[in-house]
Length: 84
Picture 1 (cartoon, rainbow, N blue to C red):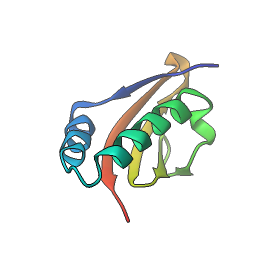
Picture 2 (cartoon, rainbow, N blue to C red):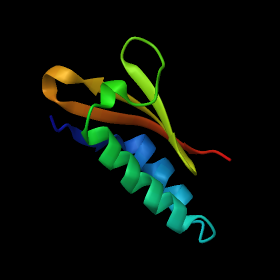
Picture 3 (cartoon, one colour):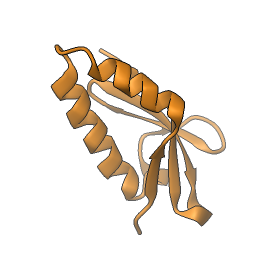
């Protein structure tokens, strides 16, 4: 089943700041696209659990914290950051 992926305003701004660095722009763009694709399918099995309703996944060079709402078929990205 397909989920809708929503980046909340704060992680969207975090992603935009990372994208502005020309040295990592292509990697950030590719990782964000890959994360979106991965989260659309079986997000409740992706990455690692971080509490009752949150999970974390890493796709170099990004890490994202997300929340799955299965009844709504919705994934909300709540935090994004660059990791080495």
